Amino acid sequence: MAEYIGYLASFFIVGGFLLKDLKTIRLINLFGCICFVIYGIFLKDHRDFSQWLLPIIIPNAILSFVQIYHLTAKKV
Image (cartoon, rainbow, N blue to C red; front, side, top):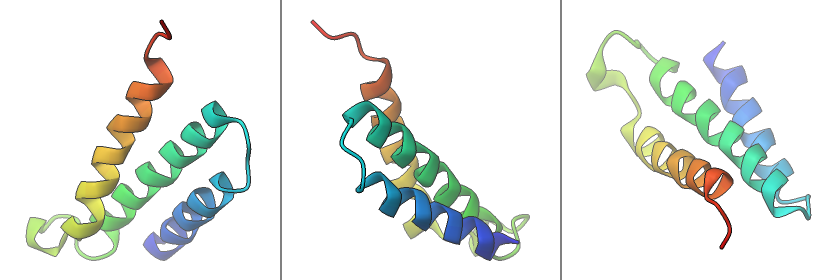
C-alpha cells in the first residue's frame, strides 16, 4: 500500500509542474509532499522510528509548511 502512496506523491509533484496557476501548483505540491511524508513513515515498519525514511520525510514536511505559509499568507 505504501508504494501506491509513493506513486501518488510522485504524480502530484510532477503534475504540479504542468500547471500555470501558482496557487494551484502550491496546493498540488502540498498534497504531494504530504503523501511523501506518509510514504516515508509507512514504507517499512511505521511503529519503529529507526525504519522511517527521514531523508524523504524531513524535506517534504518542511516543504509542506512552506506551501501552507504561501497559500495562507495575506498579500500586501
